[in-house]
Length: 371
Image (tube, rainbow, N blue to C red):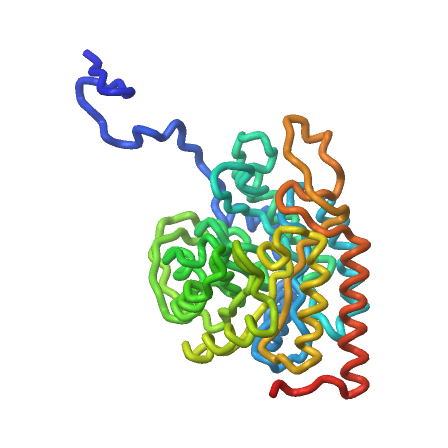
């Protein structure tokens, strides 16, 4: 006879396994998906070179700024490719001052509930066709890479990098996951430089600790390319760096903030390499203020702040954002479904102007050393 206990109904032989799991579905392995969407030898060489350039920028060997630019999240592959074409053309005009990496974010951490990104829910309807999401993401990364752009992704799920790691040139760990030991050990094994964001309250300690933790060898449970559960042992990632994204109460991109961050990094024995996020807390969640942050960043660099190695912009084809409704066909083209972004015209204007300011300052010998 079945036995009822609370909300559960058990057979006479009670099972304690997976009592809240509704369904278990097989998932294509990383090697199966990479076989469907392979990386050519030429593309692999370009990605390797882009990683080297980013490493040189973060170390100060390359005097350009790293510019991580793109939508808050990717939800429409067609619009993403359109954006990539525009960004590639712009990147060639400003390449003497900025090394552009396209922001291609497929995973979105949520404070409570909401759309979790193209990989987990590609149809944006709660169906969670993750197999489709992984294939869509990898094929899109390949198409954008073919255009000649370096790619940057936020890492959230510890399994997903096995599907797309070889296509990334840069990665970030978000403010909500920087403190997570899982993500620190994951970062220690990633093949790319990793930026750690400060906490949402503006505190830097967690991010600095994360950089130190990720630089050390680690071991963690994950999967290999064949989908087997394995123990992954890492050598540590010495290309961790700090991303200043502001806090709930105040921005942290000003000169005093950068000096404080630089000192804390140096005191912790970490190379002072800082990337400024022009959005989030630094823009007080007002997308139109990103240009103010970028101008301040450019001014600091001109005045000799060498610890600033780059910046991030949330940008899309059209400005603002929109809510996800039941009918995807009603979504506006090229408009974010997560954080609001500046539009393309504004993106082109402020990046072109920023590059010109740096170019003129260097030509006129106006770039000075920090006192």
